[in-house]
Length: 123
Image (cartoon, rainbow, N blue to C red; front, side, top):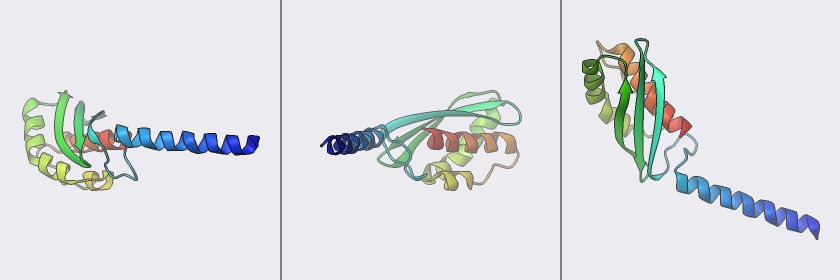
């Protein structure tokens, strides 16, 4: 009898955990999941650091915002404008890391790409 109670308790605990994870929009197998959840991450660019906020809604990246960057604002804005459509279309960490870099802003572009991947990967 005690074994059955323990098993039922564990099953209920696992189900509650899955429901919570689904509601919080956690990454599922490196695919995006979530209903209106924002993820933040930072990374080094080689010339400084960059911090992004990635908004996920209905299983898609809907917004990428640079919230802090030590690189030149011109490089950050140029890089974000050039890479945002491809980063938003990429719906997995692997696809994000495959987005082409911006010529002339390689360090900033690499940092942006890695920060977005980290935000999705790390929730």
